[in-house]
Length: 193
Image 1 (cartoon, helix red, strand yellow):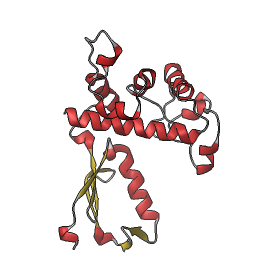
Image 2: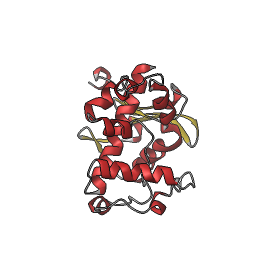
Image 3: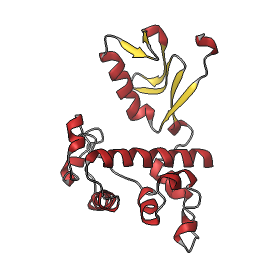
């Protein structure tokens, strides 16, 4: 049955440098992992790595986690910028290649915000109760310990603009919008390439 199962690719941008560690850390901390209704063992997991810390592919049963960065060797924000029609004189034409992003963000001001690099408070969101907070956290809460970097004033202003433009009332809404924006941008750039 497993040999005939449809292989499902789950694409992460930069799995090798960041997201792969999260998946492996989770799997290593679990005594039992329930996946597709059954317990999986180490024999159900195949890892392709370029080093001990860089995972390029993780396969669990018929699910294959792959790194799009291996095929598109630029940051997602650079890929999104390259898709914008720079010669366009009106805003509608500038974003005409973002067909999937437009499905989620129909208003021009929302689309414009979603077609640029967003920021996220990864270290600050360390439990689900933070999703209930009703305001965007201070700029200092966007510090990223993985890259040991702070966000710029312009990046924080962008986050504030997103929170206000979408009339958000919780960090959960900010989180969901951030994920949808990244996913739709990745789909658009993948199709383009």
